[in-house]
Amino acid sequence: MALLTTPTTRAGLFAAALALGGSAATPLSAQDNAAGFFTDKQITITVGSSPGGGYDTYARLIARHFGDHVPGHPSIVVANMPGAGGNVLANQLYTLSPKDGTVIGAVQSGVMFEPLFGPNPVKHQPDKFSYLGSANDDVYICVVRADAPATSFADMFNKQIILAASNNSSTSDYARLLNNVLGTKFRIVVGYAGSSEIGLAIDKGEANGACGLAWPSISVTKHDWFADGPLNNKMRVFVQTHAKGHPDLNKAGVPLAGSFAKTEEQTKILDLFFSQSTFGRPYLLPPGVPTERVALLRKAFAETMVDPAYKADAARMHLDIDAVSGEEVQEAVHKVYAAPPDLIAKTRKALLGD
Image 1 (cartoon, helix red, strand yellow):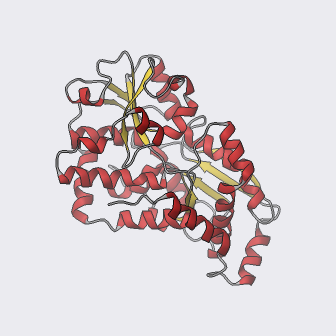
Image 2: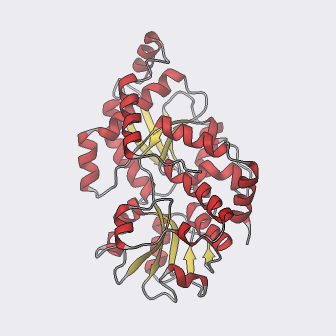
Image 3: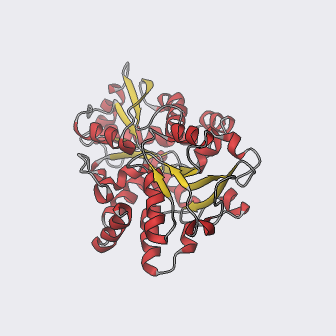
């Protein structure tokens, strides 16, 4: 199940979004009303993780430029609502948040899978949200300290290392999936609030490493880990949990987890779960926001992603810019929910099994 698109396709989607601006589906008078609505308003981008991590870093970068592209130039503020890998925020957005376009969620990609694969019931339905886009196509990785009992992915099948994780998040899901599908021997210790706390635990030696970290952000927020590259003497990226991998990591020789699959079923399970990278850092609206405001905010997001000031700001922060349009994210989420039931069941078992 391949949901990733080529850069050419992605560029075309952004061009279409910018050119149309929702006009094909929204009458001119409705667009005018939507534009006027945001004058003197405040839009809150709420992040489903703690401050200081990758999701928070990207949200604050976007917030500095997004208002320039929303008619009426509303003020943009960032808030944090961590918990359950972003599902606390997703539930809030789905059930209680204003449905007028003034609250935007920045949730973890795993939120999209929670109703299908999560261990606990949630109140949200990801295919019912309206997606503005994704800040990038994330490449998730596993890292390990150089002094750990095992430092190569091949060794992880015979030796145990301790991985720090947040409960019901990418850091626990990816590690558990590798254990149950490929047979690695990770000991997963959950209870950390977010990637910042996980990084501190690794620095202090409480854990050997972690999985489910996004390379575009962790390479910046923990720059000291990789100052000499992804395989330096302090911290090593030992596998990529992604369909294609990141160019820099591929060049460095970091293997893809999928290359260790031994059966077609293992490959399909990994492909389905890894497809979430398409919506690596999704920005979404609650169900029920008027369609003309969705179109307006989606266009503003697309414009922000190609804004020279935004791109220059991201470059200064050494953040990857590989944005995905709202249309593409919406389609990717729908494709996941249209996957064969038996494949969904097998993937769920792999994620929940011990």
